[in-house]
Image (cartoon, rainbow, N blue to C red; front, side):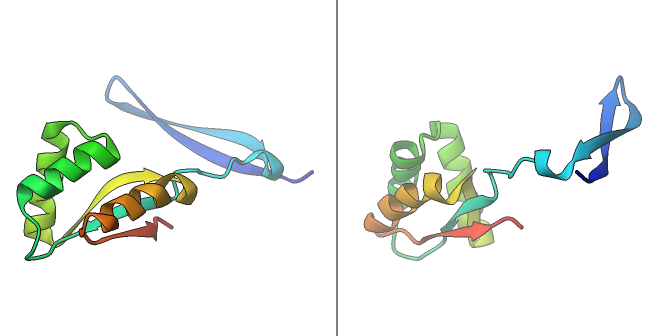
Length: 108
């Protein structure tokens, strides 16, 4: 069993500490949050419809949904949810069924 060094950076009371931890390669967990659900801007859907969709489909608070809608409007796209592909796929389908552009992208 190979052991790889893993450096963990910690901030404690505004001071940085770095600790080396030996972790067996087999024990490294796969990150389930390796995908992100991206919402895309368009000239068709209203802010209200996008906000309602984010609240209903992604369980955003009204404030989160409004902020995401603004980011999409000004930046062209916005990551609205992170998770595994299987977790995000039904949300992506529900958003696109409502006529809003959405994709799932790898964070890697």
